[in-house]
Image 1: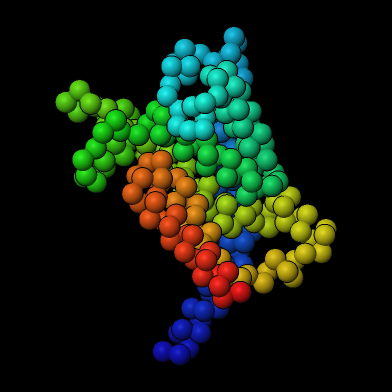
Image 2: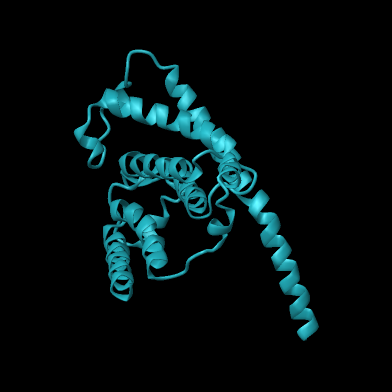
Length: 224
């Protein structure tokens, strides 16, 4: 039994090492393709924000901006993020930018108008537009996938096949980066990011996570 677990541990060590090179690359390339396609299509639109976009209700603070400014932000946000993720440059920043863009799009267009429970909410986990009894139930499956993909890149970075890793090596920070910290502040960050998303989609869940994040941050400060 000990020999089996030792072989398993050696295997997982090698898989983890290989994953540092390969795992984030696939996510980066897929997201780069998807958002380059979306952003470049928007670049081809002349005359500012189209009517469907101008008539969309955006959550705060984006609802305070003009439709043309929001169109400009999302267009160049998608294009620049796609290029950056392709090369793995400032991966965490641009992955977070796409997380914001995806959240705003989901809240404004793809989230159901009303829902009374998780079973009803699940009806909208679809690519096509779902309408029941005249009410829009959602079509947010792709956005849930984007949420998961961007969160992985935010937490793990672009991997070793990235310009980010090259910059780390160039500035001789490799040893410091590899010393991963696991403390209350780590827990706070882990709760903060999904909490920011869920506070727009399922407010009660988002508030619980944000309160937990704040509590972990306080605990870190008290222990420090």
